[in-house]
Amino acid sequence: MAPLLLAVDFDGTITMRDTLHVIVDEYGCEGVWEDLEPDLRAGRITIEQAMSRQFAEVRADHDEIMALVRERAGTRDGIHELVEFADAEGHRVVIMSAGFRTVIDGVLGDLGLDHLEVVSNEAIFAPEGCTLVFSDDRGEICPLCDRRCKRHALAVRHRGEPIVFVGDGISDRCVSGMADLVFARAHLAEWLDERGDAYEPFEDFHHVIARVREWQHEGRAAA
Ligand SMILES: [Mg+2]
Ligand SMILES: [Zn+2]
Image 1: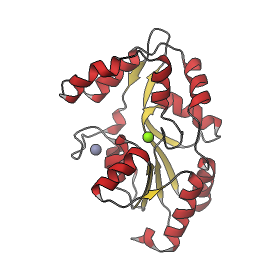
Image 2: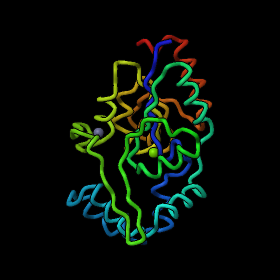
Image 3: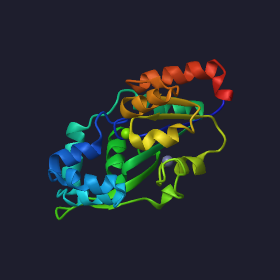
């Protein structure tokens, strides 16, 4: 079977709950996002600026954040098996996240998956407030969404293999359009439904593995 590029979102995909939501729910300052929303909607501030202001109110150190994430975010069944499947079959796996490297590394480390390539932003957690560092890796502004989305990062990693994408959120919209096979749930699934675009629903990664195998045997991956 031909090697594939498996691009997998992190928050709400590898984790059951979005770690950014988990962190803000516990340590964030109530009402900050609501106050920022009019400026955000009017285009006076970017989503990155809004996120930075929201996380500036998150006053907790790295250990407190990781304890919270470990307690509340959860991980989706079968992620370890997906990576084993990919390693055995020669597929590349890239984790593509709009979230934070330090949190992702902690969760992947717990899963024994710290060897995976990760594309993400970063957060420096501190009792005085959190500082976000947005990755330069996201390169050019995307013509579809007018932002630095995940498309560029996937494009520069693509070596011509069929692409399988797994995701759930707004930041997965554009990049999912580059994939030959899309697994979607939650917001991403609703958005693809609205557009009439094809995708596979998924609840866990065992299903993703089974469906990727079938898809390859159907000969679709060669297309
Ligand atoms: Mg997500
Ligand atoms: Zn985009």
